[in-house]
Image (cartoon, rainbow, N blue to C red; front, side, top):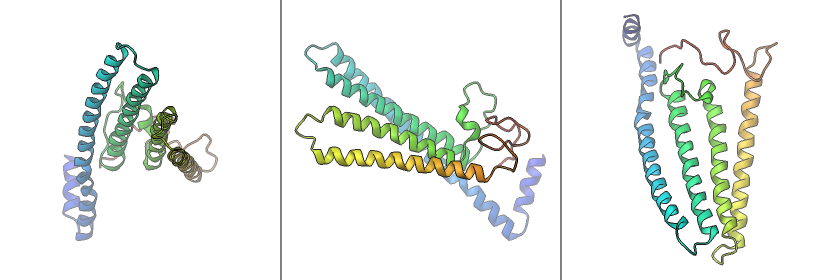
Length: 209
């Protein structure tokens, strides 16, 4: 009843307040984006099963080089890492930009979700991209002996991978500086403690969006 009365007050206020509440409500427009990523996740699961079937056929075949099996396995690892990236974007992005998931106390609640924000999400996504880039770079190194892999291609992909690493380090340093600058004087530890709760734990009550 109180929540309904609060919502009525928002919509029955002055035009500026109604406009602000409408703009805040527009965050739900992002809902189809996250639903689309869930569909993309299902597509990757299907591709993983197809590649796994291919790997089983190769593994029990005769005369198959070990490097071929290794490349297929790296492809499976690549699919898994991209799938993990999708999960972080879906769960973390929805929690940060759309609405609270309200899964406090669930036994499968991710630990990183307890302190997720836009900066933490960027750093985690950058680390995931580095992992994916490492898999692709390893595949290139394995195929380096083949004639279709040129030294120029190998060089530029290595430079791109190092660029990803430097970008992730820069994001992590920026996040660290922002955390330090937002810490109250006399506070200890890597982050602020909110409402008397221990670091890393989620607030028991949050203001409804």
